[in-house]
Length: 317
Ligand code: UDP
Ligand code: MG
Image (cartoon, protein in one colour):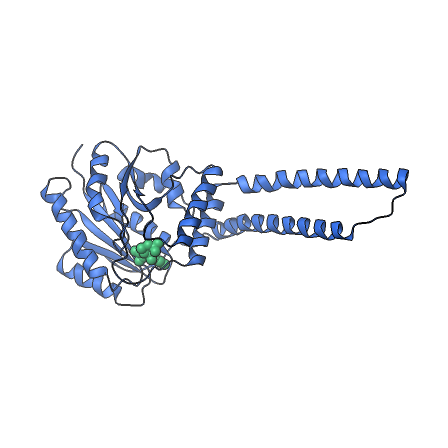
C-alpha cells in the first residue's frame, strides 16, 4: 500500500486558550510522521470552528496564512461536536485524503497514538478506533453515565466497545461509504462500528484538558446518548410493546379474578392503597412508554424535515 495523505480533523468550540498550542503540536506530529516516511508531505489539518464566540477563528486564519496545511471552516452558528466532526469528515473527503484522524482541540487524546493508527491502517484496517485506557480525568458522574450508556447500547444491539471515543482513523473507503448514509443525526460511534469495515483498536491515555473548560454538560451528554440509542436501535420500542402486552394480560387476569370473587364470595372492594399503587405504577409506565415513543417520533420528525446538518459560513482550503 502507498503511504497515505493524512487529514487531521479538529472540532473547535471556544478553544482560544489551547488552539495555538494544539495546532503547533499537530504540525509537529505531521512533520515527524512525514520525516519517518509514514505519511505524504501534503498531509494537512482541518479545523472546524463550531460557531465559537471567542478568537478561535482568528487563530485558525492566522495559521492558515502562515502554512497552507492548516485548513478549516467556520460554522455560521454552534451545531455541536458531532456535526463539527461530520463536517470535518465530509470536507476532507471533498478536499482529498487517504485517511482522516479526528482528535479534540484540547489534546486530551494522545496525539502520539496517531502513529499507531497509521500502522494499523497500513496493515489493512479501514477504521482504527481509539480506546481510552482509563477515565482518570473524568468525574465520577461522567464515568458512571458513560458505563451505563455503553452497557445499554450493547444490550440494545449496537456493538460499541466501552471507552470508545471520537478519536479514530477512517480510510477513504469509509468516508465514501459514509456518503451513502444520509441520515441527519448520524451517530458516528454507532455508524463506524456497524458498517462492516475492517476495524482495529489502539489504546491511548487520556490527559487533562490543555486549557479552558469542557463544553459538554449533563444535558448535551444526555442528548448525545438519547440520539445514540434512538438512531441505532428500535429495541426500546419493541420492549414497550411487549411490556404493554403483559400489562394487559395481567389486567385481564386481575379483572377475571375480581368478577369471580364478586360472584362467589360477594366480597366488597377493599384496598384503597392497592388502587392508588396500581394507578401510580400503571400511570408511570404509560407515561414512560409514551415518552419513549415520543423520542422516536422526534427522531423521525427531525429527519423528515431534512434540514442541513450544518451550515458553513467561511471555508479556507
Ligand atoms: N466541541 C465542538 N462543539 C461543541 C462542543 C464541543 O466542536 O458544541 C469540541 C471541543 O472544542 C473539543 C471537542 O469537541 O475539541 C470535545 O469537547 P470537550 O473537550 O469540551 O469535551 P470533553 O472532552 O469534556 O468530553
Ligand atoms: Mg475534552
